[in-house]
Length: 183
Image (cartoon, rainbow, N blue to C red; front, side, top):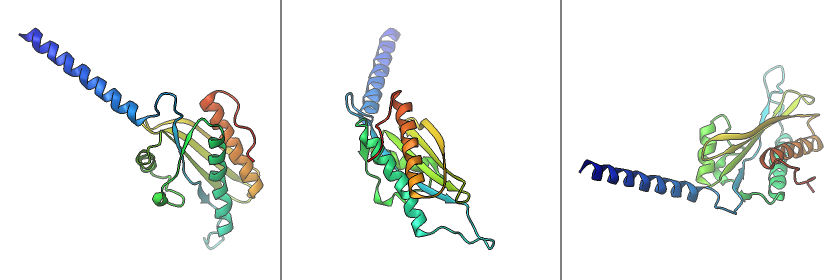
């Protein structure tokens, strides 16, 4: 009789394992389909302040930084290796990257398999960095992280930094060349 119970237990465990695998596979990219990628708007960390502590950030500065995420979306979509997921309107502008679980939960809610976040940090007009991170959403694991030093705080320099970051991500993910220059 105990061998019959053991057989039932093993059968139940197998059924549970098959069910769990089916659920995981249903939530991730299906075989032959590219993974879903959510690219959030680029955060802006502006450390330039006046002697009284007032920020130097202007609306034009914010628009310059926004083009970084636009270039990242364009380059990643241009590879044909991802199904792009639109960021929800309530994601924040940009979303708060200080809470990794929050942005991963946002990506999960949108059905994304991968999440690309980025932030521009400006110390002054000469010292600017673009930090980026591509994460696998289900396992909350980083696939590629990196920094690109930007040679100034102007549109041309920020676009070039975003293109370099996208190329690094594409090479890390595919092991090959990127999608070429953005148009």
